[in-house]
Structures are given as C-alpha cells and as structure tokens.
Amino acid sequence: MITVAQIGQVFVKATQFLHPETVEITPWGIRHDRDFLLAEANDAFVNSEGHGQFFPLTFTLDADADTLRLDMPCGGVVEGPAAGTGRTWAVNQFGLRMLQVAEVEGPWAQALSDFAGRPIRLVRSVRAGAGVDIMPITFVTTGSLRRLERAVGAPVDAARFRPGLVLRNEIEHEEDGWEDRRMRIGDAVLKVRSPVPRCGIPGFNPVGGERDQDIMKALIRYRDKAAYPDGMLAGYETPGFATYAQVIEPGAVRLGDPVTLLD
Image 1: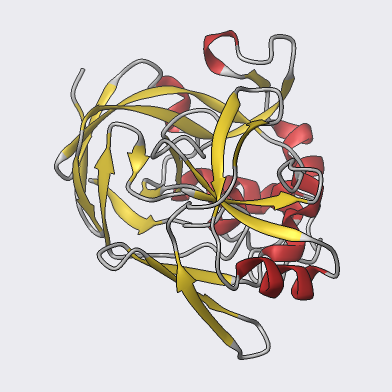
Image 2: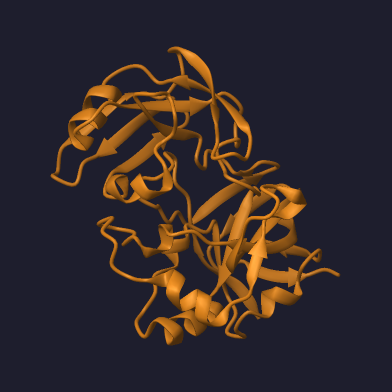
C-alpha cells in the first residue's frame, strides 16, 4: 500500500521547510504554502542561488490572527503582522509569470536585512497560492529517493526537493508511469503530471543552507531530461526528479493517509 510518509510546507519561500502532520489542499495547492516571498532592493525575488542563505530562518503563520513568527538561527524571535498592507507591485517570477505582491509591513524588513547584510523585504502574494513556481503540488516517493541515494553515495533528505508530499512507495520511479492519472490522497484527488526539471537548489543543505551535496551530478548520470508542463519556458530541460500534480478535488491530507490510483 502506498501511504503519505511526510508532508512539506513553507509559508515564506526559500526559508526553513516545515513538516506538519495534516494540511488542507486547496485548488491552488497546500493552504498558505509559499504565500510569502523575499524581495531584494530592486523589487525582484531572491534568486535560486541565494535561497540557501535563508534556509535557516523558520517562519510560522497564525492564520486566524494573521500574524507571523520568525525564529532566527541564533535563538532570537521576531513577531508581527502577516497582512500585505504596504506597496504593491508586479514581479517577473523567474520568467514563468508576473506575480502581484504587496509588502508586509512591520519588523520584517529590518530583521531580514540585518540577517542578510543587505536590504531584504517580506512580501505576500496578492492571490493565494500564486507563489508556487509551476504546479500546485509536488510529490516524491521513498523508492525514488533510495535510488538517488545510491547515485549520490549518501543519504538524501527529501526536504532538499521541498515537496508537498513524500509518498511511501519502495518501487523506484514507478511514478514516471503515472502521468495524467488521477490519484486519491486522503480527502483530495490529484492529477499526476510530469517530472520536475531540477536546478541547483537541492544541492543546498535544507537546514543550514550550505551547498554540501552535488545532487545534479548524480541526476545527470541516471535520469532523463524533463521539460516544464504546458509549454512553460519552452526549450528548458534538465534531469527530472519528483513529480508535479494538479488538484482535481480539494481536501485534507494527513500523515499515513492511503494513496490510491483511480484510473
């Protein structure tokens, strides 16, 4: 039986990846996942090469109170509002789409800038769920992780790929044959899409942010190249690992929930 082995979520993109026991999957993905992003002084998002610097920061959201808490790696805590009440503007999201964001006012600019050593602001996507890069959900299986570990020659933490779901299935890369199939997970139904073309981010340690594993070199040795679905960034192809999924029916997903292929 295939089951949910781990759930992943991050409120602020490029910060510490969290592992809740239950989440609500909406039509746009896991509720509040990547609702917030980090912006540079030039109004662009922190680029992928800069993500590792912010991985040690842990943000948690109190959705009822609409407040955020930031736990710093040094032990300090910053708390403040989560509403995007500041200046709004549109950001080119890595060539994929234009994303409308609003600055989150309060203590965030000072705290983030002090940590980074340069001006950094916290922004919130105006539309819920728009902060994900491509598809609402990404999942990976334990069998595929074990196959990658053999190629790397060391344990590989699933959090390096920041998937919304880790599925316990020991048949390596069986999910490559699930494209366009529907899959029930807990109360939700997803449609499996294509493998995820990888970049250099999985090379960063998911806790400390340092670059400590050459994941891409291992993937190049044994995985075929994959393209983004639906013609996004046409011509861009890199080795594929983990899998995109669309939401057909929203619903709650919990650790241990069974996973059933419906067609």
